Length: 478
Ligand code: ATP
Ligand code: MG
Image (cartoon, rainbow, N blue to C red):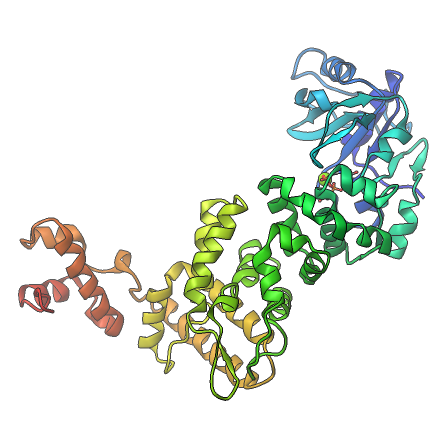
């Protein structure tokens, strides 16, 4: 089998070969091309040491960054030839680990020297890395068989662990003994499930069985690295693999709140299955977008803490959106998410169960104000996924309600009605001009005006509102 390497990758491999070294495309990019997926990035592995790699590509640039890097006679297949690269230089990305980034016309390629990882410390990092001339040694240190293949046009595939077979069978399997590999680097356990979720693959039984006894080691992995894998899993085509994160015991370590949801049944006709099972279903029902998936993961996170049972044995979860938003904020901070993501997810969790009733334009305007304009239209996607993941009890009615809610929202949008202070026809300076002393009183009056305008949009005219102000309609006891 042959694969089509991009021109720049061919160029880098060719340059290294001409200097007397071996070089291959390796890892995720080889896997993705075989699967017919677009690789995120192209990694190259080579027998050349980092210093040599730097030299070769410095020379390729002729010492002058504007010089060309390749000419016709260096064409990899004898005809055609390389386009001229106007800029070529290297960056020391991880020089002590053997990685140099080769930049070709603003596109970066990581070129890493064949290496053997030394003893692992703390289930996290190798103590040292040793460079080697043996490609096989480099492939052995990689996590899964499907990620441990190398390819170049001259040799074809180097596939020592039957990665191609596992791609065919749809299996995530460790290179070597799973216990050892997970013992070296605990993050690999979460990566295994992440790849299963991205590719729709199964975990090989031995690989899966090795996780539970070692799951505790995930506590030694940095929150940032956990976050990265978790987000990739959640935004994949198979977010239901969160179930495997729970079943293997990993959730107990990285997301105990999710384990609790999995262990909380819901005796309520609107639901079928535990809080966790409902959550998993809802993940698949929402578009594959980071904030939406995170929102679904946490929308019911407080249910285990809010459970009450009525005399008929029905469970209720009063107050769970509000408490859930607070918990979500704490969890996302713990996982080192950025503030913008935290704000957005919290607001959506807080609003997920909010239902304007009856559905009138006035009530929808009030809901938009209450939940924050920024939560729309995302909130509809959240609410739809929530309903679709519930039992069939009143499902049709719930969906009809949501459709009507959205329709009214669109009408309001089209009319460009005022929904927040920034759209109010009167500003703080207007009030100062009208004689109000600067201070908290201004905010109070503006808010009263906004409440009126939400009820009656036609009042949102400067002269009307200021007229009402002068008529003392917003006095202290208003
Ligand atoms: P993606 O498409 O998500 O980037 P990837 O397979 O390229 O997936 P990377 O994290 O970019 O994953 O890593 C590149 C390659 O490095 C992997 O394919 C694998 O061969 C190796 N690798 C990455 N992380 C580990 C690890 N923790 N242990 C062993 N090998 C690893
Ligand atoms: Mg990658």
